[in-house]
Length: 112
Image (cartoon, rainbow, N blue to C red; front, side, top):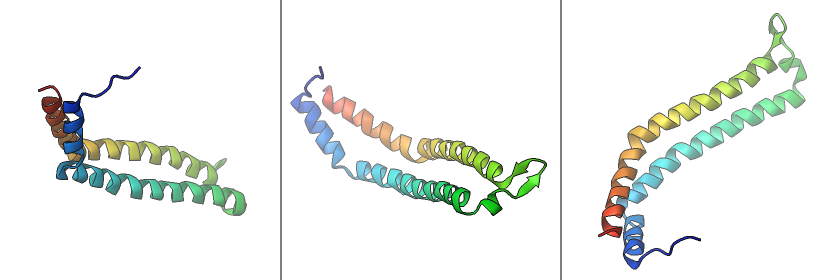
């Protein structure tokens, strides 16, 4: 069962949630996540569509028994890990300092 927030903790939360710093944190987050998600989904759906509707292209041999479909599928994994790595670096540099400061302010206010 969850504990009910104290009035002091709720007031701290409300103040921080309305702050310019919190708005900047949300804007920074959305500015990275939305375009990256849209880009990745387009990249993935293009792979699926080509697999279904362009078999000649996807069956093109690159070397040996390796074709474009296999390389493109492997690139999906590489892209996923690349985006995760990029997000971790972006977050550590641009978002974590703001989030840490907001969390510290919340802890001080809520426990004062």
